[in-house]
Image 1 (cartoon, one colour):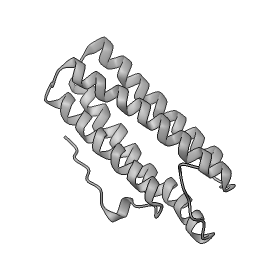
Image 2: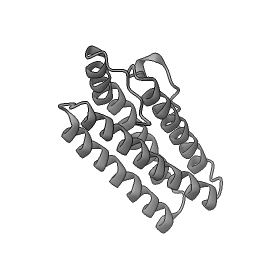
Image 3: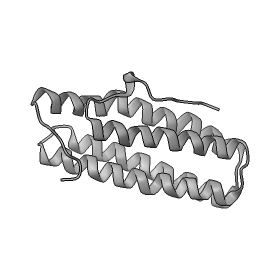
Length: 142
């Protein structure tokens, strides 16, 4: 199992975004562990559903802020967010069809966790730099 823990290399420099990313990483790690240890279908499905709902909330919130502050990378972010959400939904469907297979665990570990970390370190850091360069104080609840 891949175990990713939060460290400063994952910070985008926007507190509320960092907190949401911490939650995503923590829950993906829990999901991976649940699948690998066959914790039971209801627990795994609940984790998958939470991840889908939370990523939808997070991505929508992030994109709203990107639009508000005229972030030039918004359209690319939307595309990447959509790809991740689609992959997550596919994993949920795979689990409903096949159960907690080794393939599902591998997909979570190799695709979802890697995608999230690479996306944060690459694309989301660019957004953080943009916000910080413009000295914008963001409130994601706006």
